[in-house]
Length: 79
Image (cartoon, rainbow, N blue to C red; front, side, top):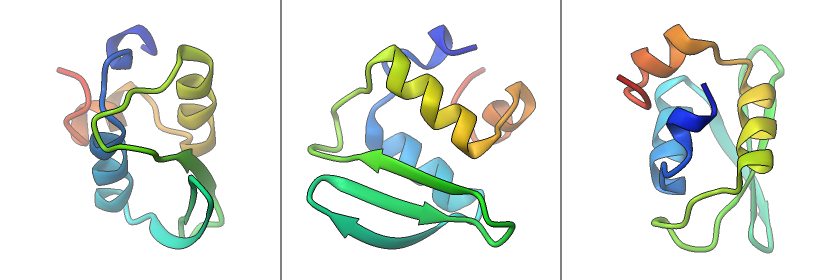
């Protein structure tokens, strides 16, 4: 599942967060914090929108969002 997202730009991940009702809360340096109403919290490192994340960071991001493969398809991150 992570391999399919390998070259996904950060701006697409942020767009998916916002579609899934995560709300932007604060920023500290290059870190942006998004929270969901059910208390999930995601920190994403944002430098440029076209940047991609290393696989380990991407895995941590997916774990934090608790998205499964169906969610990734629904948010148009995978086919």
